[in-house]
Length: 164
Image (cartoon, rainbow, N blue to C red; front, side):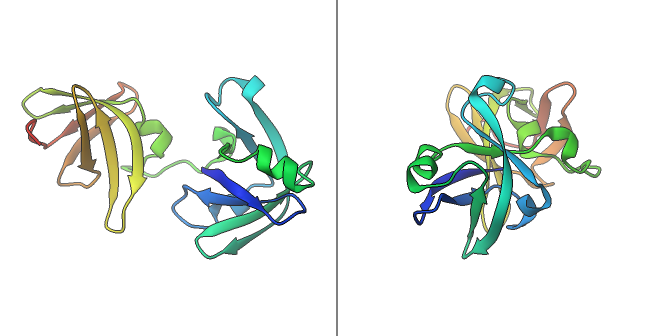
């Protein structure tokens, strides 16, 4: 849902780059999980209560319980921010959480295997999926290109030339 980009000040505040549709969406959650690596590995993640939070330009400034000085905040730099999946709203039809797209196998209409989705990012116009196979491809996540998404089967069908 975001990542810690830097400490802010000397009292343990953090600068957070959110990966949410709306800048302040993380404010809907009282507790955040911070960690590195696989979120299923609870040894690498810890739950922290949000004490205070505010929007600052395109970032969030957050004070988390237990992060009380600049050194503790600096130790959080680079960590991912997450919330439990069961606390997230259910996506509507033809809406997906980016985390659900990561790992999907992507094929085009000619059944050419383009690779697996390694990342998703937003641009000003639309979201883009990063597909890694024999080479990396950046494919726009728009209705004209993405024809079918089957999260259960972990597949995506796209209208995309294999030469691109």
